Image 1 (cartoon, rainbow, N blue to C red):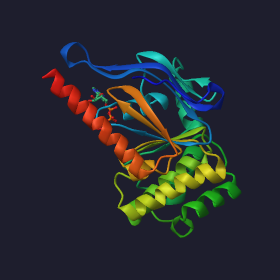
Image 2: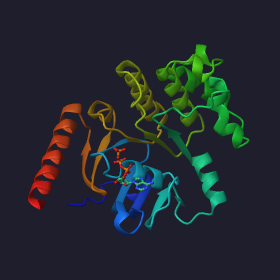
Image 3: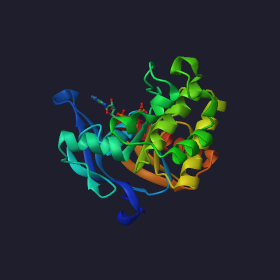
Length: 260
Ligand SMILES: Nc1ncnc2c1ncn2[C@@H]1O[C@H](COP(=O)(O)OP(=O)(O)OP(=O)(O)O)[C@@H](O)[C@H]1O
């Protein structure tokens, strides 16, 4: 079953239209995405789940313009990402997209404040001081701004990364396993912050996760299997997500038994 999308194009902050992604060639060829068409609603929090190797990170990287599609197109807001020149792609990623990675990806020589303001300084843009304060207060980092990453806990470093993504008010924040390296308390802090940035500031967030508890913070969960979107769930709870994942495992196991 391939579902397309229940969100209209006009309501979407990011879109994939019949996206195919193939890695390698010949016997080593892997089809990571098989004609994915999906819309991500503006001002909402969407989680992407699915078994390992189902194409979650590939889809996110294609959407964010970090990787090229073989066929189909991706759009951020009004901009068609597919086909942009390198220069325009760099500008789009800098101005319209925020990233949060599992490994935090902070610059070790810069303070927390300098890391947070880095995307703005690279784009030669001045921070809106009021907005900066609001982000810092929401993320709870006011007393850590002059510390370097090595002087911060993992949870604090990830909150710096969240603030860095949010401070430029991007069209979309893409988060790839943002709680994967955190203990459950710090993970909850980060997820609470992501949820608040959607509810308070209307931020659009797309998050890849393996964790049903993390997915329960989202408004909608998309399920990928074998490079296709196979299901979606609105207003998820951790238990319902877990049941859905178990159902997929059974289907995959059944299919592999039949192929033996
Ligand atoms: N750079 C690459 N070169 C070759 N194959 C790749 C590359 N990146 C991903 N793949 C393959 O594409 C498929 C989808 O990978 P992807 O990382 O998107 O899956 P995923 O659902 O994010 O997995 P995980 O949950 O384990 O992170 C996998 O079979 C993977 O091995």
